Image (cartoon, rainbow, N blue to C red):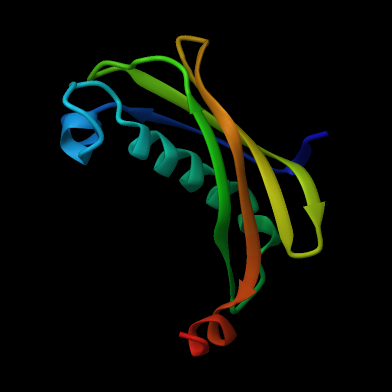
Length: 123
């Protein structure tokens, strides 16, 4: 079940800096999996923002991602994130990435809301 108030969508355009060749995850000029993962995480940050209070932030704690299809430079990728599970400070998001409506990636990103000062004091 998706929690609509913790959802976001963003469109990204694949550039040369996003390719597997550029990010070191392969030799092809197609969207690299590490960049797709970063985009999914960025959209979950946007989605969780309404639940994050003053002096708080969220941190990613678990990511599971299937990269199902190649995307060439210049293509647009729509990334969606919606909360599928909420337990206090922990929020799991279902994420998907589509190119022209076709699924090219999906998975789950778990984020935990933390107090910034307390979190940083532990480092």
